[in-house]
Image 1 (spheres, rainbow, N blue to C red):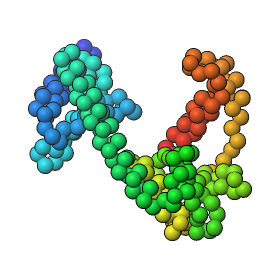
Image 2 (cartoon, one colour):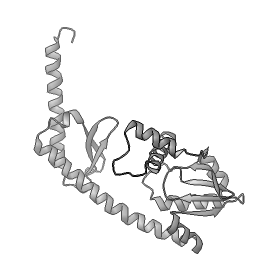
Image 3 (cartoon, rainbow, N blue to C red):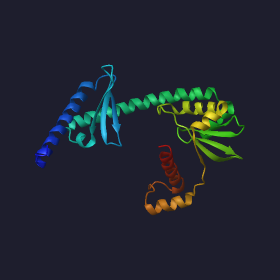
Image 4 (tube, rainbow, N blue to C red):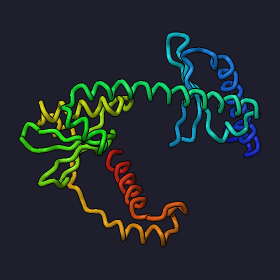
Length: 236
């Protein structure tokens, strides 16, 4: 290897990349019609690919985005179409699952809790400690301790399986708060709720020119952006 010139090394890399692209393309053509075929993507590593379990064992094929762009237009369009179809199918399945999960949650809520959920997308429960907790629609940082009508403490408890439907998670949180609060507090990340100065956020958003043109009042928009950034950072 020490005797190879830079040009020879680059030629070897090109041959290796071309071979990987051909293997990926051939595997895509072989497996794309199988019922166990699923597209995958890894944004952090800039890779696209797919999995298939047609042999009884899940096999994975990934290609760097840089190499994917060098594939033929036909291959790229075929893969993008497969992604679109799977996303649409996943969205339909997710909506069906969430509907069933919501119906199950409603079965275990009192009438006033169901009314509250419909009106405010949240409901309150009495914990084992006699205090009031509010569970909001969501899967991250969606539980609050309420004292004198004010949300004072926020809890974030995320299951290992991120595919659990939102309403199933809310039901599990309700059961834990009512029946095993100690376990809930042990598993949850806890932080004090801080007041958000929306006027200051709006001013900073205007200065940075990041407010969408169609937003008349940037205050709530800026607040949502900050909350989302905080959620991603604290639940990472």
